[in-house]
Image 1: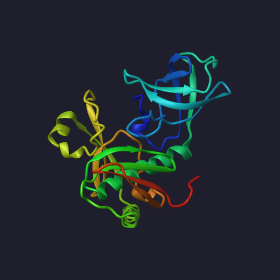
Image 2: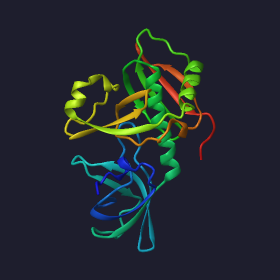
Image 3: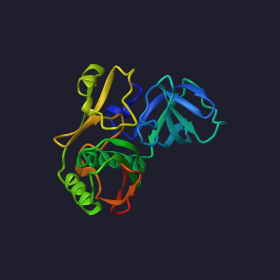
Length: 237
């Protein structure tokens, strides 16, 4: 099994696995449903259950070598390589992040300009665009965004090679973050007929899985940059 189970099964909230390495608070697993922070999306939190004991997972990251590791809330956990564990992500938090991440891809489809930055939060998120003289309206964007959500469009993942990506440079919308150059294959998120771009994050399966949103603020961040904030129209639990 590939270590990054979340890429193939983003809706999987629990999984049995085995600890392969321990370094203080940090544990590596043979397989992980915990998403490591990256691409603007925070790392997953949750818990591990081992022999009747529960350990809190604060964060998840990817090492320089590409391994996914989980940060426990304490170092004196007594866990060791070879221990079997039951992994449980904080699903309500993850699902809010999945909705927000997919919503930002929808926002990209509405603004045909380069993305210069972004941040995904479980209650509010934002993208920065190099708009130049292009103008945007908060109310109009809100209406367009929710129309795309209500279109119930499938959101799928596919994989392409580095050569295919190099032959289609327009797929990359982000000016500040590029897909990894050393990866054998690149994940594409395809919101059918609306948006397609490289992305390693977790997403909902259908645009209709995103709760109603609104554009809360548009900020001027320089002569050309505009920062667009989105929030859920109603609190999500």
